[in-house]
Length: 317
Image 1 (cartoon, rainbow, N blue to C red):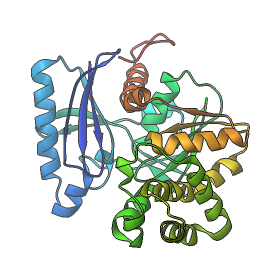
Image 2 (spheres, rainbow, N blue to C red):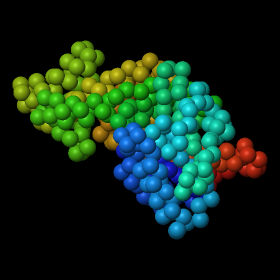
Image 3 (cartoon, rainbow, N blue to C red):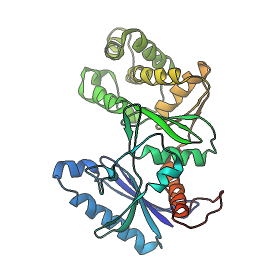
Image 4 (cartoon, rainbow, N blue to C red):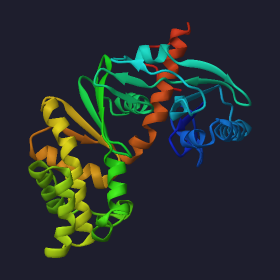
């Protein structure tokens, strides 16, 4: 069994993977931002110590693998980005083993910086896992929806490039700290997207740019009687226009796999299908398992590179 640590900006999570399923999961509301504020990594290190100790009391953990913001300057152990393109084999060979006080040996998965002047920490592990889980071969684009939307270009040879925007943070700011607060609802509470209003928002952003398209959310509420859900749907569509531009430039020959909240993946998938672009939505189950499966797969390759012969079709364990 391996213990997998996934560190974000505000949360760090540990999961135990037995090769088939997650057997244990725990998280703490401490992340890289904590280290940036306090100026040391003490709180994060203590939180990770407790997570690992709790897991070891119950399960025989053979290895601890970490990714994400845990490898950032304000994380647990700073690991420089690898310059892409990066194959899975090279990524596995580049795992950094460090003894962390009170935690033991931890293998850190490096992030990747790409020729597109972009960076990632954590998504490289997620898309590695999704390619395994979904049995994908050949050129595939992954579009991750989160605090930052990120398009990641992959192929059988590995991760080729990426592009990132601030869509998630912009959505949170616009709906919570601007005049649009009274015309929208909390996006996390939006259950169903109005596809017609979403499409109008995308078209408005294409015609007028994002700022004007966003302001039209308020006009919709004042002059057209738009509901809060419709206003939020319009804003989601306006923000999606930049993502659509990425996909359009990449070309219709590449499959795009979307993963994230259904309120952002479903309308975007419907739009891509209308435009004749191959698209697939990763299920919530596969999305949740992506990083841990990716980490397990990279760990198996790392063991092989270290001299342990593994069958070519070995299942991550």
